[in-house]
Amino acid sequence: MIAALVLSSILAMYRCIKGPDWMDRVMTFDLLNNVSIASAVLYAVFSNSEEAVSLILVLAPLSFLSNTFFVFLLERKKDLS
Image 1 (cartoon, one colour):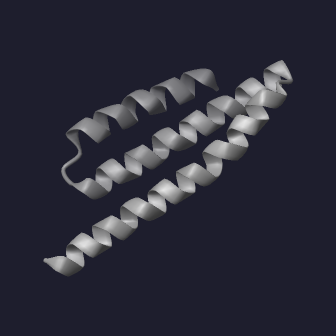
Image 2 (cartoon, one colour; image 1 turned 135 degrees about the horizontal axis):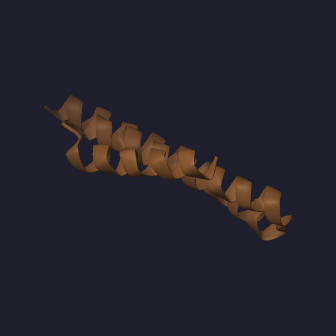
C-alpha cells in the first residue's frame, strides 16, 4: 500500500510539473492532497495515533476547500476572457 502511495505521488508530481494546462495541475494537486490524507490514515491505523486522526480531520476539509477555490478562480478567469 505504501509503495502505491509513493508511486502515485511521483507520477502526480511529474504531471504537476509537465501538465499542459492548469486543470491538470489542479487535479494532480488534489491527488497529492488525497495521497497525504491516505498516508495519514495508514499512519493512524498502524500506530493507533489520535494526533493523526486530528490531522486527517484538518486535511480533508482543507483539501476540499482548496480545490473549490482553484475551480472558482479558473472559472472566473475563463469568464473574464
